[in-house]
Image 1: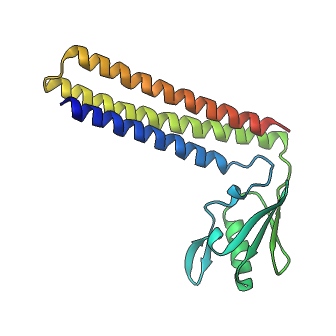
Image 2: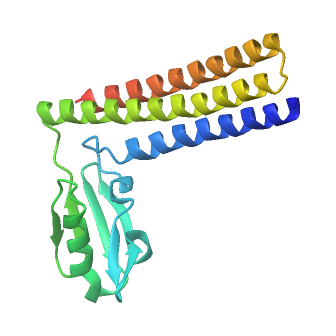
Length: 187
């Protein structure tokens, strides 16, 4: 019984880590006014009728602090890449010179920064909800084990342990969100 309980704790910790990783991946997509290739992560380009990640059909690079470059491996798909960037609705406009696509990252306005901070906080709250859901499943399992003969003291101890783990991960989420907020509000 105790080995199963420990296995559930390991699974919960793994799920907590996955939630934190997901938050970090989502926050990388929130642009901060600096050129970074991660802005283009997740963009799918139609290549011979199939959606393919942008990085598999072109070299994506940073030319300077405010400019991204995309050099397609085949010149005929440059239009498809442009359409994919527009369809991603990132608020950036690609400039096509026939050989390469350049994307200028405009500086963020104060209002846009505030909107992005709200978006970051929303991602943080979604992550906290996911963490609480994981903790809830763990608590339900502990209660089930208590009805199956787990001692009251051990059950209380495990519930406290689950809560402490949750508190640690919520602190991590708060730190990640706070760091991103500072990054966004720095001009």
